[in-house]
Length: 183
Image 1 (tube, helix red, strand yellow):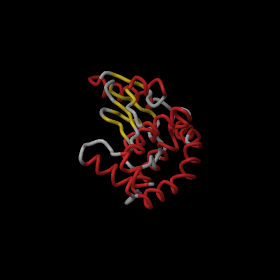
Image 2 (image 1 turned 180 degrees about the vertical axis):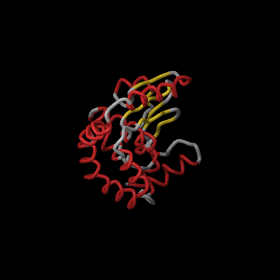
Image 3 (image 1 turned 90 degrees about the vertical axis):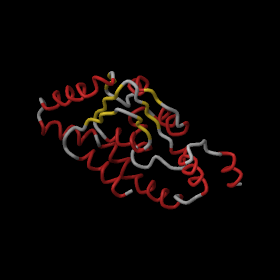
Image 4 (image 1 turned 30 degrees about the horizontal axis):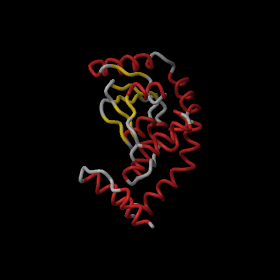
């Protein structure tokens, strides 16, 4: 968890814009890395998804902190509670992405955006990024410890065990079994 948190910190505080190049499933921690980047370009067949509530984890490093800021409170709750796939077109509409392109044009689109960023004043970009990160940093530093603690305490719970075992066995989670065990 420490390295995961450190990586997110570096993405947000590097002082230069970062571009997420999304070319596959952007799920859980992958989506959290997406949100820690400043900009995001995805292939048109990409799906975005959070799965913690369906698989026995919590969105610890970015999703609970950043989704409400990016997509709004109700959509954030929908993403985190329902754990459904969000196709690239919907992710663009909701503000999770800046651009969606055919897979064959992904590298060219990322290169084009990077070229546009290169032609900007670096100190101005650095300051703008620092100011834009204010609300993210505030929510991050207020909650990341809670997430770490939850993961530490619940890591071996029956709920997490069933979610992870179902994932490993490539089967659905037996939610009824978990509910009976928790009664």
